[in-house]
Length: 96
Image (cartoon, rainbow, N blue to C red; front, side):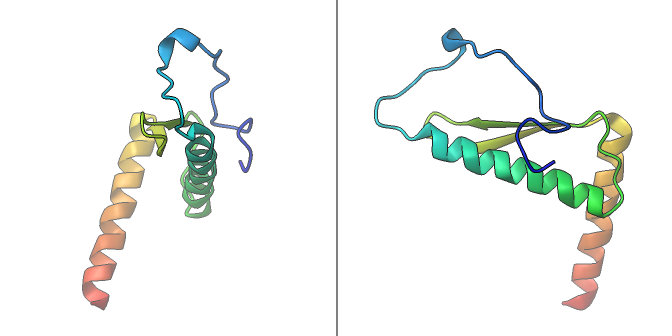
C-alpha cells in the first residue's frame, strides 16, 4: 500500500475543468504528503487487523496547496475503526 497505484487508490481520469489552479501554489508537495499519509493510514489500519478491502484512500489538495486525504469506508469497517478509536481513547484516559 506504499504507492499511489496500490490497493485502495482509485484510478481516476484527470479532469482539468474540475480543478482551479492558483498561480504560484505548490500543489504537488501537498498531494505527495497526502499520498504518503493515505498509505500510512491504510498500513496502520491493516496493522491493527482492520480489513481495508473496499476502502478508498484519495490524495488531494485544497486551494492553498495543503494535502488532504479523503477516506471512504464500508459501513462495517467504519464501525470497526470507530470502536478501535474508542478503545484507544479509553486506554489513554486510564494511562493519564
